[in-house]
Every structure is written in C-alpha cells, then in structure tokens.
Image (cartoon, rainbow, N blue to C red; front, side, top):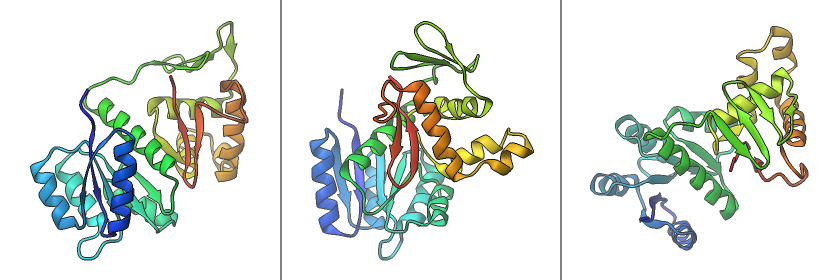
Length: 235
C-alpha cells in the first residue's frame, strides 16, 4: 500500500521541519509549503490525501485558503492554531475544515487526529459505515440501537443511546463537548435540553465508559482528546 501524502503549510520553518520529521517517521509521505500561495501551487500539481494548515500566516491565512480549497475540492483539512476560543474553532469548521487542533499540542494527538481524518475520508469516498460496530467484547447495532455484551443486552438510557448513535455514525471522529450537547438536544424533550450542558457530557461519558470499557479508568475505545472532546475508536 502506498503511503498517504500530506501537505504541511506553515510559515514557521522550525514547525514545518518538526512536523515533517514526525509525520515521516510515523509512516507518511510529507511535503511542505511556507505560504498559502505555494500551497495552492502544489495542490494543483499533486493529489494530496490531506492538508495540515496553520491558521495564522502572513498574506493569505489558513482560513481563507481552507474556504477556497474546500469549495472546489474534497481533500480533508486539519487546521492548527494558537487561537483556542470556541468561536475560532467554529469559524474554522464553517470555512470547511475537517478538524481544528489548538497549539501547543502533543505530537501523539496530532497523529491520532490525522489518522481519524484519513479514515473518515476513505468512508466518504465510498465505504459504507457499518450498521454494527465492535468495541472490544461489546457490539453496538445502529439499526436496533442496542448494545450487547457476549451474553446479554446492556441497558442504555435514552440519552446514552443518543450519544452512542452519534459516535457510531462517525467512528474515529472527534466531537467537542458542545457538539455532543447539540446532538442530545436536537432530539431531546425540552426538560432534558434545559439540563444538558458541557459538564453533563463529562458525566454521561463516564457512565457510558462503565458500560463499554473493560477498564473505564483507562479507556481504550471511548477516548478523551485533550483540549477538544471525545472520540469513539472501534475495532
């Protein structure tokens, strides 16, 4: 299998060098650009599997480049930025980004997000999301909205079921707490909507892990993505 080809765009030479070295050592083929203009030129010449763009660059910034490329191309985009406000992340998604990673970040987290985005990209290109997913010894059926252990059905509350549906529809996708609140509120009774907030999500995730994970204190499937939210990574 050929290596996935990534384009890293950042005006900081040190960051470009570090990211290229890390991602190359992680099994990817990596090209770099120091500006949006050069990125456009390379993008026209090469079919990249993914773009990693810094938001704050002189001249055309990463948000503008994201908006232009996402309107004409389906190549997934990960934005990197020191801007950590929720409004900045929302703007990035509105421009067409697939994910948004605040700086500073751990290299391992970057790698997890790259892997997750590439998996989603493959699904968009024709692979159907399975109606049944395996989570260790557990199995979740999306049609029946049921979670099963090897011997019996595991009881889920209506809110836990909504969370499972959200994660199962987009496995390996990172969801912010705000997104999870909205996923619950979109189909919840008014009384539930009023009680659902970001802190509630953390409690719900804890309860869901107790039903999914062999060791909830060290989750291997329903993972915390530092600084952003949660991701379900099935087998």
